[in-house]
Image (cartoon, rainbow, N blue to C red; front, side):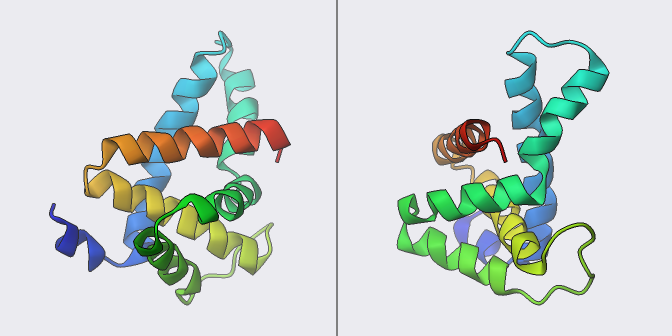
Length: 131
């Protein structure tokens, strides 16, 4: 997909894809730790994929994004939510959705270097801060 096509995609749809892409990155990271018990793998993964962890990572990494990238994140964050988030504050939920939309955007624009940089940094931030 070209940049213009991706730019016009609904940010909720971008987040839908970004969620899956990020989930794979988290699972790869956890498998590299040498943990192979399925229950334990899931327990470890939860803190990386929870809205609180994603929102914290987005806040920390936002200053490192370009103006264009920040604009996409703001657009995703400010999108009206139609469902009430369970177990998390709406602002946290919106930031987490923006986090996932940004990953979906990078994936669809085939910016693999930037995608891997962002996901690696996000995982490191969450791992370091224990969100």
